[in-house]
Image 1: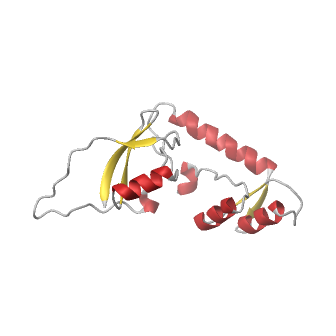
Image 2: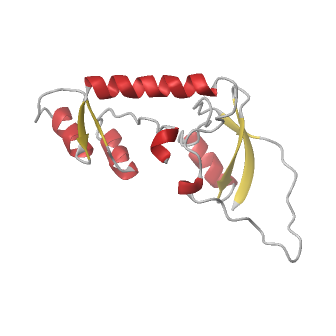
Length: 152
């Protein structure tokens, strides 16, 4: 594995781990790498100094488990409160104007897409694999961000 410092076209810096330079380039060309701040897919590697591990130190540290990571980063940054409130308002509008279909989201979305069910706005739960399959089939889906209070 190789660690790269990355920067998007808007100057946002972040990091990523890849199997090697070829893996980075392949994922970048396929549009699979996006800035976590602005979602730009125009990402480049930054010049980095090599990290040389000491003889008795581990080569890499264990990353935190996904469940231990905050869902909305930068909660203490200026504008974060307004950002979270905007997401909260978006969720309220979706919940007020769409039918909750729970874990049947992928199935219901397909039925609507293939005109086997009446067209309507829905929201619910889907696995990442289900969402990818829906997108590959041409079914338009969008994730709703998880709010801090939903994480607890």
